Image (tube, rainbow over all chains, first blue to last red; front, side, top):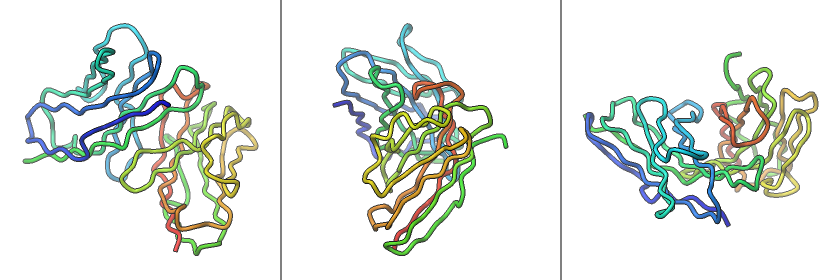
Length: 114
Length: 115
């Protein structure tokens, strides 16, 4: 069965520091991969997605993610975080066999230390 | 409106009551999704509509859950005889194209509390 694991429940980083949020997936074929962000009081927003091609994907708000097939990972990175990046981040996988369903991880809450 | 809206934003129900949750997707969006998000968890897929057709309802947890989108725009998620385990945030999302692999635009959710 397809699954997504986000091993870090909560991460705190200092403003201006670099960030890496981990995501591992379990799926038999090449998946479609997403990162969404959920800010307090707001709906989830797509940061970036990977379908094929270049394994380093650029997204909005200065985020990027790298697909590593050998590690079944799709980690999210940002070189320098801003206080406004404090939010919940969800990794998701879309099985090729499904036209509709994507599976979300349990999320990583990011706090920013002033 | 500019985005996906949901109403009510908060709903408190006594166990056994029926509830109806409304979703207004972005105008012209073909796809509409419902998700259930329990506290501290990621959204879990409930059901998917392409226009007025419900193409996937594999995530509905029981026959007490029912969703419709009769005219291919507004959708209603109905939960009959609510139970405490139904307490969660119910998210609606819409997408311009068919299928779940395109960018989904999420509403703010309806927080349901069953007492």
